[in-house]
Every structure is written in structure tokens, then in C-alpha cells.
Length: 157
Image 1 (cartoon, helix red, strand yellow):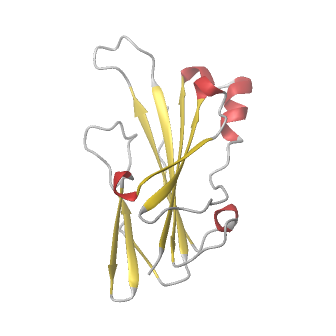
Image 2 (image 1 turned 60 degrees about the vertical axis):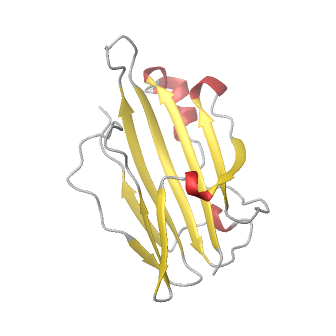
């Protein structure tokens, strides 16, 4: 069955933790209209502080998206991968994978906090949003509320 993947990454530094830049960052969308995709590709949207949070869209091989996708028994199992070296904020524990029925879609959000190894650079942050549909979707599907929502965001301090 068809699987549609959209990965939205917003990245910023301490400069966008307050004031006008924080307001711009907080106003960034977490879902976008999906363009026609080549088979086995994901719609990737990046919004960076250094670009004024202007969305930059591309298509990437779905295997490069940090999410596990597995079809079994008529459902799609999804679970974002988190590399051990990435700067996760403190969390109780990771939620279990989500299983989607045909026609459903899920939004899963995670955030990260980073510092340079030597402490010479300021903190930086990411917010990853994965919008994943099991089955065909219309272009604007990810602009609406999802069937399943997982909020795995932690405090960034």
C-alpha cells in the first residue's frame, strides 16, 4: 500500500529563544501541502533560523528519514529513530510505536538540544515533525488535524 512521508525540521539557536525571532519560530507550520512525489521519496521541509524560517522544500529517499516504517497484518507500524548521540532533552521514556490502519495518518513530534563538545558554541535546537499517511492522501492532508498525534517533545531549558 502507498505510504506518504513528510519530514519537517525547524532549527534555531539561543537567538530565537525569545522576542520577535521566537514568535516567528513558533508560527512555523508543522504540516505542508504534499507535492507529487517520486516513488520511495519523502517530502522534506527545512526551516532554519539563519534563513528567517522560510520553508525550503525538497524530496529525499524515504530511507534517509529517521523513522522506522514496517507494514504487517494490514497496518503500518511507525516509530521515529533517535540516535544515541543526539541531544535529547530529558524525557521519561520513549512512547511505543504507532500502528496505522489504511486511510489514517499520524503526526509525531520530537525535539533536540545540542551544544558543541568543547562548549565553544552556543546551544542549538531542532524540532522534527513526521507526518506519515498509510494509503493515498490528498495534497492538503497534512494541513489538518491528524488521526494520531504523538508529542515526544521535552523541556529545552
